[in-house]
Length: 119
Image (cartoon, rainbow, N blue to C red):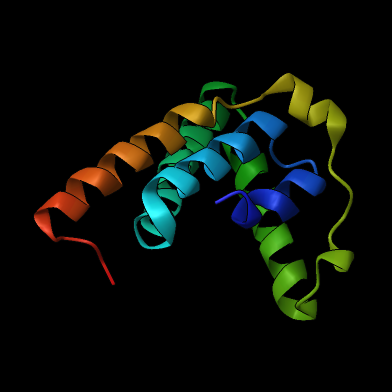
């Protein structure tokens, strides 16, 4: 679980607490359900980030920045092409990422009990 978030942590996109939470969740759930939990939590985190940016009046800026990062990564298939993290922007509008990750864990456990996991 922690390995999935190691690169975003090194790039400054998330904190060490989120990395440790993902590692513990992955160890507790195992690789199959853990991957589903991280995917679900990351998707929920996207909605929290969009809501946070919209609330701060920076939705357009956030979408343009995310699209630029996706383009740079996809065009080079390397994280070396990505610009360094903007530490000042991170201090202005941090998002609480632990809550979506926890919701992803709960959701994955509930879906696994029903046999409704995606793959």
